[in-house]
Image 1 (spheres, helix red, strand yellow):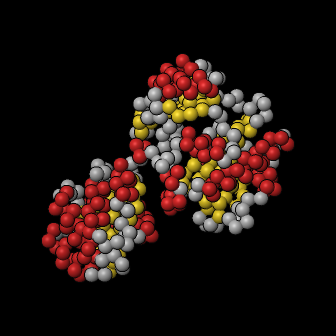
Image 2 (cartoon, one colour):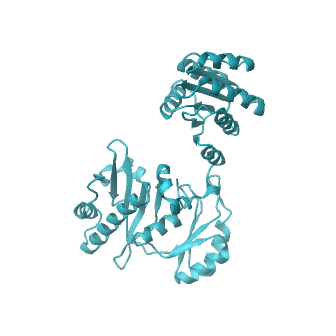
Image 3 (cartoon, helix red, strand yellow):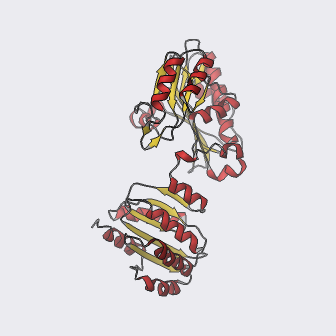
Length: 378
């Protein structure tokens, strides 16, 4: 789950990480009130779950409250990469002396959080990694032992020479690690971490992504979810207990099991196709899940063929087939559909699907090739 910058800064502030004063506004009048309260020049920043806000004109400097009002009127309602700006963060503008990067992610290979710091802040860390990888310093943290102050200090020395700033950065890194664990984050990032003319080290920007699997114990954080900023089809999938991620291709995929779903998408790419989504219906045999999955896939105008690949273990193939038949009755798909069902009750499933004359494939390779052919990509 993604949260907005103003929400991440709220969490940072509660964790003792220094952030510029400011607040969120949904109207230009609210922006004026916040700017007046800050009492100095401010930045007006669009709050949308997408990068490149500055390049799109969604981050502007305001000399005073009146300028903040005008800018808020301009930015609110702006379209940034398909998302409408409904909120802005009005926050104190800081004079910047240096910019650094501090971030924490969960490394799946080592099953440990990894802290990354770089003196090259203010740009995408991916760009730094590609062009100047020697400027990125990493520390893998044993989740049992936790982060030690000497480890954080060693990282801080990679960013600053001034001992006072090293101490401030050490404290920020320690507190960022605490926040990372406290909110079940998959990513916690400060970019840039700045120093100002007074020598203060401040988190000028803030980004936190939350692990959905931890939301059951993060009620306050879960309440921060901005439904307006999320893909409607992904919301529908979550409500139906489906794992769904929209992609940019034209082959709609309905699969059970994350591993099989990934393998299916890999084969689609291998044979020259482009998957339109990741969609895992899970281990349930509920026909309604299949109906919902078909509805979600068909709502994507880019889809030109649908590939259904089910391995029946706990999932019964005949239940999936019944769901497909019901989906055809309800939606009458205008795009071709090809199916592979193997495992529990696969013969019953084949008998059921004969009633709607669906193309049937016997292997994973064949179902992928058939889907690509039906999409007109061969």
